[in-house]
Length: 176
Image (cartoon, rainbow, N blue to C red; front, top):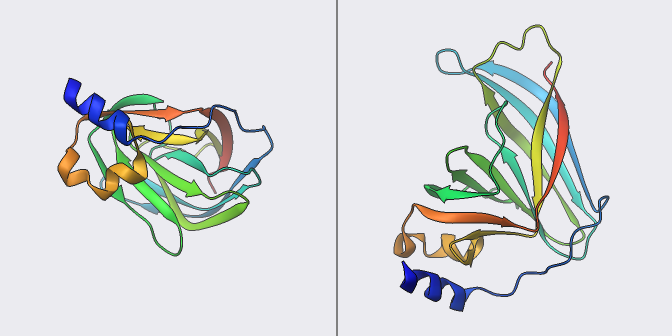
């Protein structure tokens, strides 16, 4: 383990230590549809729009399930590259799974099929709040996520992860 920590730290670039201004990242979820999933699972689809007006790239972390909150650190079981349509995205498996979207400085993204799942009955409510992280960097071991995924077969899985310079937002999503 010591070898990997030293090895990862040698490969890791410095991470900015300043925090993002509160209004530099705008996030909007627009309800698209709800579909019945496997057994008692329901899938809610949203158009996700994120605008980054800061001078640094950021990552937006969204839970894959309603009523969960991704942890800012833990053990990563797997990461899959989920990039498409000029989006840089990762599907992250941990105790609480989540999606990661990278937004370059002074740019924006639109994800047409952002999916959040539930097994709960939301028929009597019209809105639900979810936690969303905005972070400077996602690290796996000591490596930035983009470096890890390029060689993930070499590094393996079950490695600690952490969010660097994280801010938590609470977004309210329509359910209908």
